[in-house]
Length: 317
Image (tube, helix red, strand yellow):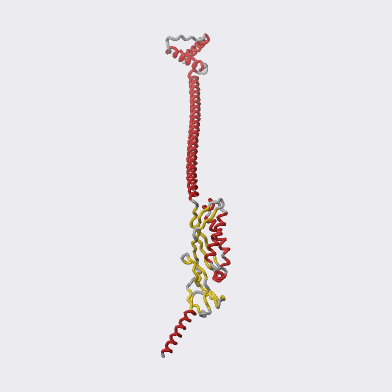
């Protein structure tokens, strides 16, 4: 009886072991490569799967886990990120610097990832390092510091093309940090300070130039406005003088007309006006400085005869 019990327990243990080996539950976004007697048989899909125990076995591949290379039969199909250690590179102008890169990739073909390369993470790391050296070696220091997007795109294209035969898709590459030597950093800081001082001087000189231009334009505008004002003043004065002379002439014409009407056509009104002017002049001479001697020309006495025309005016009345 005891022998039967031992055999039964052994059979149960064997059945459980066989069932455990035969049934595989694959999580979502993961897969396994199954080999039968060392030869590729199939790629398991996520979910419930059955294999022949002791005949079918999973293919082990190398993966990077917690910074260490480990063997596992489970292949993760999700996007993965590798943070490689800092890499020493030399630019085209012989400046040595350290670059820290991140690589985002995804296994698209598990068969190629398992059979086309022995150590996939190490191969991607070494390929990234050598490609990065080649790209940086074609750029000068200033281009390296200001062209991260260009470097990322070039590196991604090269890696994606090279890793295609391994069944890997490189989605993107990011340069986390670019660290030039301390001496270069000091020189760059001095250069930046000099550029800032230069821009400040340029802005100051441009401001002074603009201020002088505005001041000269203001002076020119003021001169033009003054000239225009003087011109308008002269025009108005000339127009006023002309209007005054016209009014005087009109007044004299009206006076002559009235005198003509008063004295009649037989008497020349010019004699009247001339006599009036003569009397006014003599009055002004009489009211002037008494210490001065005034000499009249001999011909001026002939003008006195015009006074006789005044008698004619009173005779007509």
